[in-house]
Amino acid sequence: MPRFPDCEDQLSESDKKDCSNRKMFEYIYKNIKYPIDAKINGIEGKVVSQFIINTDGSVSNIQIIQDIGGGCGKAVIDLLQTMNDMPEKWIPGRQSGKNVNVVYTLPIKFKMSGDQPNTKEISKKSDEVSVNDAKKIIGEMAIFPINENINNEIQRINISNNEMRKFIEKHLKYPSKAKDNNIEGTTYIRINLDAKGVITDAVITEDIGFGCGEEGLRVVKMMPNWIPATKDGKAVSSTQTIPISFRLKTEMKTEFQNKND
Image 1 (cartoon, rainbow, N blue to C red):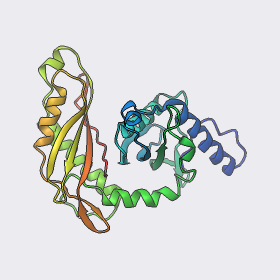
Image 2 (image 1 turned 90 degrees about the vertical axis):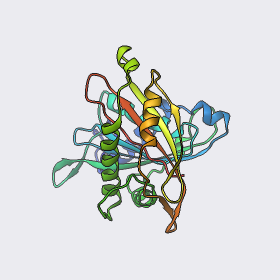
Image 3 (image 1 turned 180 degrees about the horizontal axis):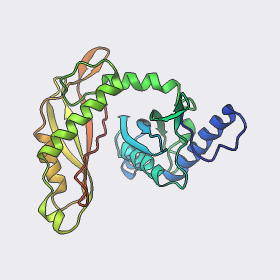
């Protein structure tokens, strides 16, 4: 498994792992903020994130696979993205003597105690026990429609995200006002899905202005019906948050976060 940096001077693998967990908790507690909306509304609970630690130690493909609202999911995304700016990156996972990409699952419990989430309640076995929990959550999430019938939960959601990315890139137009003012950033669109996968509501939850939010909303409303979320084998309504990233200097990219309530 990958390890958080600054622990390679430890002698045993067990000591390295314990040090890695401790360093990661310290980093999270220092850098994450309890969102104002969550504090005002007294929102508490557990946010579960999933991301890939690449062979070079960088973090990518950040997903929120369980959210509690109030901006807590976004707070976790923002935190994880800062890991790519650390002086030392993660120590990548290895298999058969080679660095490999590893899917990592991290639950963070937000509890009202000052202005910080209670990171002490992060599972110390997040790299082991929570993998099965994450697979179950991922398997129950609503996904953008795909043609393939795939049983592997992570592969299934990755293909779904790729299809959604293609759809958005096909239809998204960079607003002229944003281009003229060199506006870049990420707009967040939250959608509500019913038990049939129909989008019943879509709202801009965070915007960078100059028409980007409206353009993201327009494209999201064009989406076909999703494959609905399930619980105990039955289709249920759910909520999804779709971040759409606008970048001027490179080809416009789209990033996705899923939330299943």
